[in-house]
Amino acid sequence: MALKQVILVRKDLKLSKGKMAAQVAHAALDAALNSEKSVMQDWLHAGGKKIVLGVEDEKELLKFWDLAKDAKLCCALIVDAGHTHVEAGTKTCLAIGPANETKIDSLTGTLKMVN
Image (cartoon, rainbow, N blue to C red):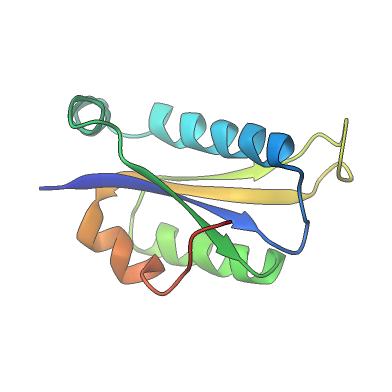
């Protein structure tokens, strides 16, 4: 079984590259640490595949959060502390997985990579 993780980032926030990188790192780490240990180990052993995709806004981000939870996929929603670019409480990104690549793709397969 191929494993991967996707991180969904809100495009409407227009985050700087550095801020986006930090938020994606928070999401990837949080979701991985909260996944089943054996799944995380298998995922890391296979190279820790990660894909960063864009969503339009908070509403779409939360839609995917609900879909991921309904599908029983490990996920992590990142809410910013507000120290730099965005207001405290802003939901910036969502990590889904590591999990079965096919299961994740059934939810996020229509989204495009972030530029």
